Image (cartoon, rainbow, N blue to C red; front, side, top):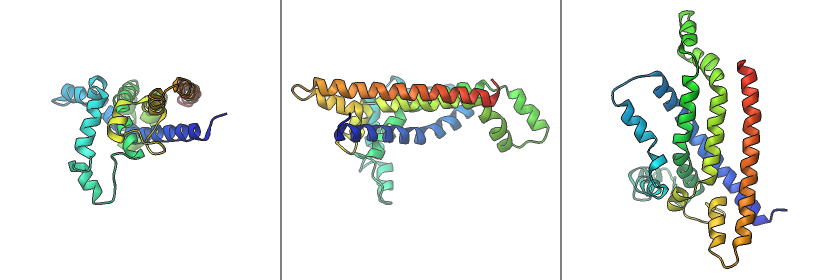
Length: 227
């Protein structure tokens, strides 16, 4: 049985990872569609920038978030006027995790959109279907398996994110301490290896559940789309 502290860490980790996906997946879907269906000057450079968090140290990403969303940052100051603070909060942890997971979700979304034959959309267009009609009745249903995969990949990446989260949101028990941060904190304590191993097992279990759930959703999506 899990202890009360472990339940708290697990619930917070799932909550933060879920919020990260809710924040990043719509952006990844829109950006993926633009990258898959349009051509414009500077597209290659934009693609590199959008994937920059994959090759930048996570601490650097966290630092950039502090400069932008911190109390003295331009976006942070603007949000403060509405009573919103992200740094050292659970929402800030979700933001950091979402930024780190974004390029992985973007890649999956883009590939899912590219896998949809544009000729099908062209036929629908010739029959009078508008953009939104084509998007919601053709493109998204056909791309659904890939989009589900993007969500699961993003959730798994956000669940295990460490560097950007601890830099931007710190390691505050009950507020921003995810499983990854709790494992790190346990290893800093004398004799904490057993606790860290137990938390690692919990993290592994959550990952397996997410993977099995994604496989079930993918199978359902393929049946729905006729693939």
